[in-house]
Length: 130
Picture 1 (tube, rainbow, N blue to C red):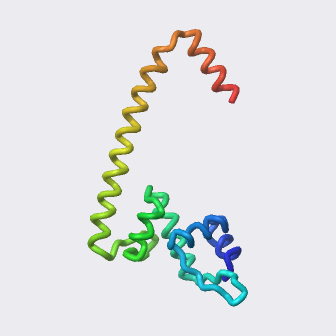
Picture 2 (cartoon, rainbow, N blue to C red):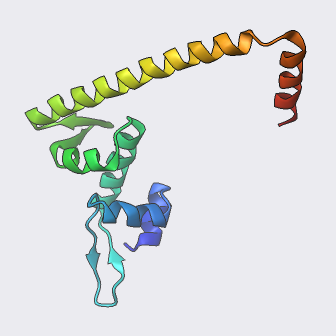
Picture 3 (cartoon, rainbow, N blue to C red):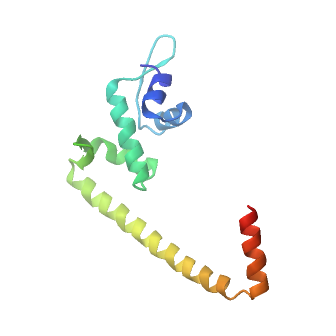
């Protein structure tokens, strides 16, 4: 199948599919005309990529972990022991980021609630207008 069909079947824009190819996540064959040719297995690969992106992994990390995953009843299953270690590290990184963001939100809340009533009322009006 060509890139347009892969895009339609996965819901992923053609530009993003080309980006996945540049990142080494997809390896379509090339026709003599230069057109990319994708297989049904590329559909599964794009779905895996989307799942891993949704899980918070970046494309560089996905490139290293993708070969060590298989699909099993709509979920990704690691098949390499090193992958589980890598995923645990990624989870810890995400947990640290979440903790830092929560702390930042608490600090912002403290500053926001310190605003005088008239300033807070104007801010609410500005927010409602947008």
